[in-house]
Length: 391
Length: 145
Image 1: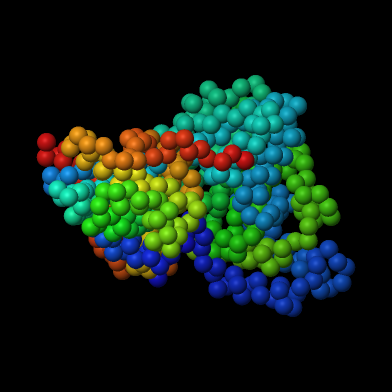
Image 2: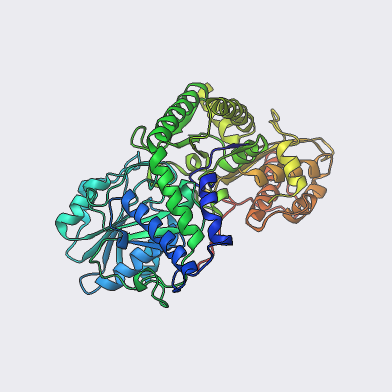
């Protein structure tokens, strides 16, 4: 099997699993208890919190564990809206956010908030002037993703943070795809809130965190016990937290080497496709993109068909076609960068890890060439295109 | 997600291609929704579908329903072809996931569109045949929650 869907999820690293195991079997104590079994759990949770805080230049009391990235996004937006609605009811975000942000914004709109969805350019980048122009006296929050999950484009987070700070507006970033992949510093980048998820960096599923800058008066997300400084009640997911801590430590340790390897593979994959498969386009910014992200539209064919054929060859990838989104519309991200519907339907995302090899990339391209040819041979759109060429 | 029959017809689609100077050609669906089917019919003087070919832009289910639809109408009379409903196509494929049912509608529409073209070219009317919709997804609305 060749796994090229690391933006969907990653393999849990063996050292992460090893670190987690004792917290299921031996050190199963509740961190809130007084005896030493519980203290061991508490110590492990605090260590993980310290590691994660250090990874983004935060203080450990600014890290709040959640059940994942979607929860962190929901918390950041809903709690900010509620806490700051006295100041205003306007939020600025982008058209290419993850649904955890977009659907939360829609929820807030139904409750009287106004949301501006910024456009992005053809590479997926936010325009800073458009952002400045969107700011109003009643704007309470700017939420822009760190890097896009589909096309890999990395947004100008530091510049956006500086604008937000200057105008006295809170800045949240959904860093689910970026945390552990690219360097992040919440102070340098003026980030007030940041969401991340464990399973995107070879950690376990079901664990994530929200960074909340000290001093922000956000309401509790889950009411109950005193866990997470009473802001997110519920007995801690100790094995998950330990796993996330270990995954973070590992991600920082290997980041340089991993990035170098992924960049080489990424650019090799892009160049082979562009050289060998006609009528395709690279989606997302060519250089300002996540090291492991490759996203192409292959004209005149449809994504799900490509995915099934790749799967039959043991290759895992993903697509922004409607058929894979469960609705009639293709990916909102691909439409936002200006693709036509049929171009968006024909998209293929391949997201690499440091474990992929050049040999695997060669196998993928060789298979992809055959698959694209086969699907074009049965495509009425390709037939029409060839006829237009002749005329 | 897909039945074995769907996967078989997707991997080995029957009757892919074009028929030059076909008796009837019908194209349905649109690129916006991600499915386009084109059906070519070769109909002899006795009204028997002698040959049928298709081309499809779409997902696995769209390819499989087109392929199955061509099998179901090949060698049949026009009236028999009119009986090939989307349900018949789905049953022949051992079912489709709920979100893919519209693909089977597309297959039925493609046959009808090709027959409509044949009828127009030959100035005849086919009993029960209505003018095909320009957009297969007309009137379909997504559920709001």
